[in-house]
Length: 252
Image 1: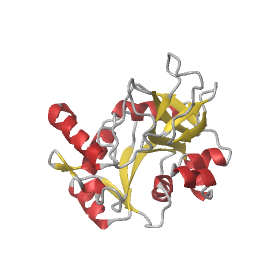
Image 2 (image 1 turned 135 degrees about the vertical axis):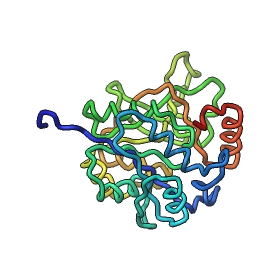
Image 3 (image 1 turned 90 degrees about the vertical axis):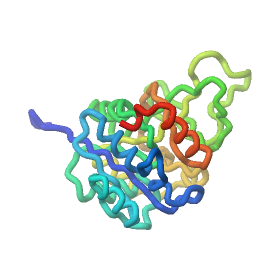
Image 4 (image 1 turned 180 degrees about the vertical axis):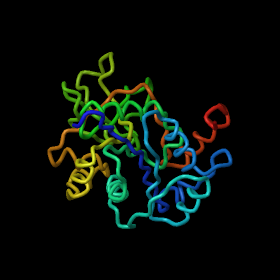
């Protein structure tokens, strides 16, 4: 790498309108602003990011994003996953590194984005985050993805089922990790992933990150203290609205 060469990182936020459980999810109102605006503004607070772009196939989302002054890239309605949508947008961008933040993460911590960016700058071609399972957390909930990690810090498997299974009872200590669903890629790895066919496990679990593992790619998993509150269901939406009303600081 030439001396003085800067690794620029773009955050790309894939956003679809046609959510099965919450149609129009990116535009749902949270504290007087659409959900996607919360996501964008929190990503913009992360240090070391060159720009934040929303990637969507829906003009309603694009108009809303342009309305609050953020950047948007139109993408195909045929994208198979968020990764594919990020890759399509990235074709028209100059950055070297990319971070994929889902459009239903209105409480994403800027620090979590910075942690992922550091992993990319440290040489990981593909990375994501995890956190220790919380006391009393319902690990059987299929909306919560779990991950098991090898001794090098790379992912062995992701599942909606509780993994690992403790035959003799769950031991003390943090051995069960919940996946925090944001991803970082080098430009080459992002395009490689988008060119790969979906695997059987990805289709079975409906987890796009399994595509990389099924095709033999290594994915670094970085532990984080941040707890993500994604919006997948009406219950999630109510919880986020409550958090926003209790702690007005997240609105600024």
